[in-house]
Length: 175
Image (cartoon, rainbow, N blue to C red; front, side, top):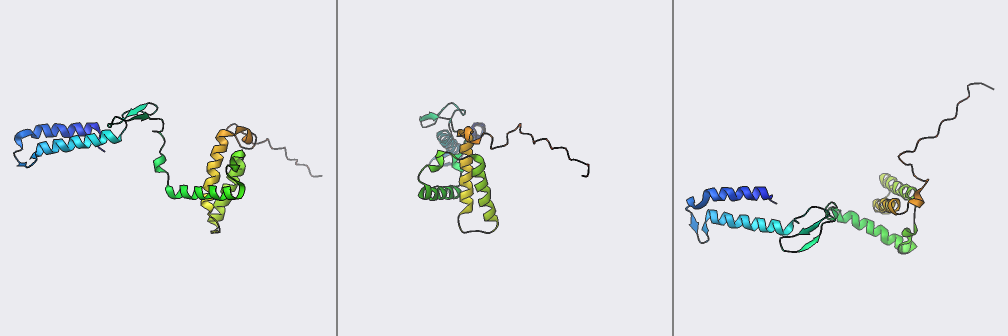
């Protein structure tokens, strides 16, 4: 898409060409045609791009208005193939354990342990099940658990201020 500065520059160039351009066809001069094209591009640009910053209300060229709260998120870039495999893992889990069983709560360390196990099985060449979809499911569930269930994860994860225990002194005497 053209920026407003690019559109303004094109308009300035069209103004300079003006009526000096003597070529005419059924739709008028080249300059007039170019001006119509620029206006059309600007109209399309205005219709597809919201006119506000994230966290505010956006007004589109069509007149539609909506919240801009997801402008810093790009759901439209998520792979549909990967998402399909995660959905397949959800369906499999639902069949085995019931819908929303996982929302009863699972700690991050357990979810990541399963994710890593699935990744290693895949790397070893095991194709007996969709390991990557299962690994992705576990990672997504770990993100969910970490954000919503801190009580399940307290004491089970290393935190930024975590320091290793002091080593016990090694005895140098031979007994």
